[in-house]
Image 1: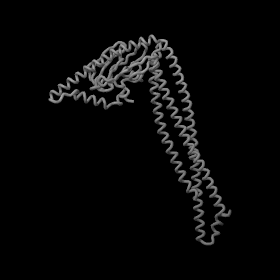
Image 2: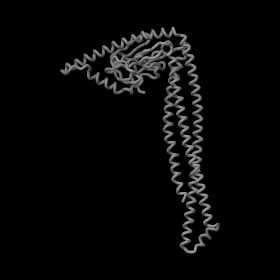
Image 3: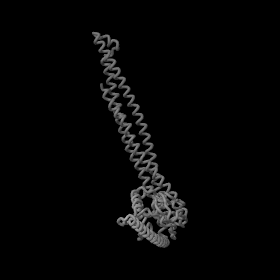
Image 4: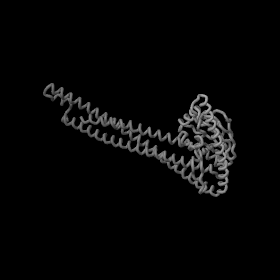
Length: 407
């Protein structure tokens, strides 16, 4: 009968109803995790921004924090927009299922009506008893009885299928209404986030204009910083040169004892260097915060024609944050440099990490350190900015720390 042909399609629709939301839910959960990660980063940057904003004069630190907030806001808006796009796809798929269910319901009702009409036509409008007892033989009576039972069962099954589709239809309508409400909430959220973005851009423009008027002060600060960085570079070079000479000397002594060919590196240096290299892209960040100045050459954020050279990265952080070692090693130097504050150099075989901009240091020269061990607290400068200057070097070659730290 026709009713039997309808059941497989209903089951397919029921499978679709179960499978489509499951896939969408996985994507939705992923987007929500990304959005929450953005919100957590925004909260951290807002804390840093509020500390720099308390200062009476405009600062590059405040501008860095605003620039970072703008980037984070853009990422948050993209995340919300992705959720809306996913919601549109989800609503579209649910509408397709709704239309299929409506079409099935109409067809099922037509089939049921045809079955009822056929039953009435077959009986000729007489009673069921008359239809049965008008049989000419007992076999014909039995056949008519069996036919009526089958037809009655088929109609009941068809009615049950209709009820099932009607229930699914009602559920689907509720699902779509719920998703539309969720979409409307996301659209409102998107508008609010865009308003925040516009406010941040306005604040950024105002701050840049204010800083441009202080060109003389900014250039003086830059010159002072460059002198301090040059002093730090000189110290790093001396420490690394000394370390390389020490390593070569130890390697020669070890080779002499074993009467082997002279090596340029001792086994300990080789082992520690290999271990360091194996952890590329896995190192913990030395401090919480955001990268306020990247590695290499880049334009000054305000001063036109000025190019900055950075042999590491600057990480702007909150006041009072503790700085930690990214890997096990040995402290090779602890030194104070005016403008930059305290600096700590740690060796990891052929590799060195440099932490500058510390207020207090809790380590001493020659001390062994472990991964994530506290080095000291971050310095707060006169503008209320706390910024770690962080470097990774392989002997004398400066490396981009962002290529080594955990993403």
